[in-house]
Length: 368
Ligand code: BGC
Image 1 (spheres, rainbow, N blue to C red):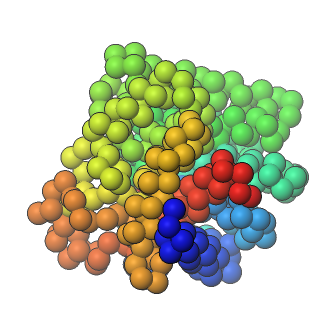
Image 2: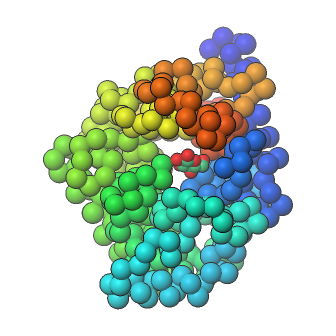
């Protein structure tokens, strides 16, 4: 790598850490983006990956504060969650708008605007990120016990129900990335608990993982949802970090190949046919692909993904949500600009996945 490029990479890494840490709200929440009103909320999905990225950098206190914020949200809704879980287990159909929302205000209240709100993956991702953080820094799960138990019950009851996906779309489908996040989260919960709670979490994790793997029957690869042959960029997470399929195994590689041939240019598209802001290439997914590549020994490819991301940082080092140079549907850009403003920049999730990729590359190269 030429020296000036290495310096630029280091500058974007330092800036990424700074953007994340300096925008953490005093409550512990992370806004999804800065300067972008619609994302001035904290998503469990984005926030958990953000907290995970800085936990890897030894920012223990910042990550603790995020996890405490999540646990407080869950604890303060224990009556609602217990009641929902009971009704779900009895087979009662429950409208999505009665379920937990996907995002909260930075002070932990439910939002008041309409949103595509019934999504389950973020709660699974939170359990996963919490366990990683606690194990990494040898911390006790005790302060989180009540929140973990509530989430195990909730996710075990609803994990196989259709809900909106990572991209807040297709609420009637059962999405493989969502199932992977829930199954991975329940597996993490099994490790953080003991006795019956741990057994319940482990059994539910296994059941949901078996369900997700039924999606491979027709094609040999993971699919966007059960019953399609299309893929989605978020499927990489089913392998790294959620471990639904082991990086490098036949199914993971078939999924990787299909992603490379259908939704990768230099960066990664969310899925074929995406029209959001014209459907550009996403920074977080490109980092994700690189993360998978590191875990399967393709370090040179991972470095290429990192270089592409660095090239698309603004001069000050901010990373956007998506890059609009090779959109799938350029005619759809303007309507979103008009509706919500320019592409969200900086997007904290982009910065987080860039940090995680960089960390994985450095670890693989033995530089840390
Ligand atoms: C994406 C979500 C994300 C949210 C906040 C939405 O446009 O589809 O995946 O959680 O933005 O970053």
